[in-house]
Image (cartoon, rainbow, N blue to C red; front, side):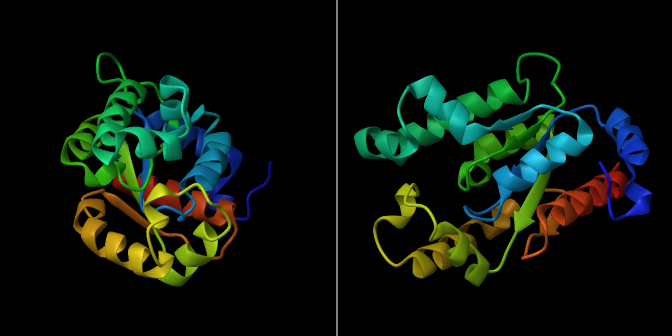
Length: 193
């Protein structure tokens, strides 16, 4: 696997990987690319990748829109917190992995505290135009079913911004290749460690 940045060759990435002793958790708005970038980052590090939303659906045996429809957002957030706690090793030594969370996970104070204590939180950020373009491709976003997606995303970003800002690493994800975003995350983690 070749990388455009010689400072982050496969050997350099493996040296960095050996220095990281906990999960890397990607947080940020829906549509910012947490899952796609997370998969690329995990591949580069040679770590497992988990998507919290997929794990929630497995545990509940329901899709996220079905959970929201049948039980509401507070019920979903409670289940999300339990799944994330398991994935960041709340009850034991944390496993090194890359974890993509749902857009509202880090906005929950208990979930945020758990992630900040047990993992390296990376806030992937993007402008509203990029988010609107990305989320418009799918119809699986329960919070966007009740109105204008641009208005809802703008409101959610404003409401959640202070929570996201508590992540020690902040990366802007725009229209660059996912690998470029993953390398930016690696550089930021290297500088932070």
